[in-house]
Length: 122
Image (cartoon, rainbow, N blue to C red):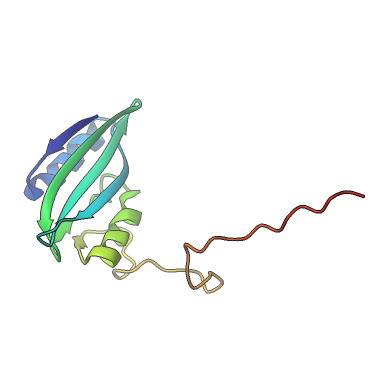
């Protein structure tokens, strides 16, 4: 897997270049570093070849959203806003900085659901 380190100012151009070249955004990872900065890693796929684009930013940074080129980025970018205090400009759709849950959803969306054991046939 190839990893490319960029400056955060290159993120928009790199996103457009990847989208134009047929790459799709798979996910992004945000890793807190000991000094308080965050290591951001965007994972791209093209024809089953994975590549990463990474850079480091201070917590609370404002970054351009990749949703204009890669619509699926809204989920991970909203999550990074909620969990790591990053802000993304041009985020589409923008849920006001927080993802939302349906009123019927559990209070903890990551709670495991229990499956009742299957009854034995008589």
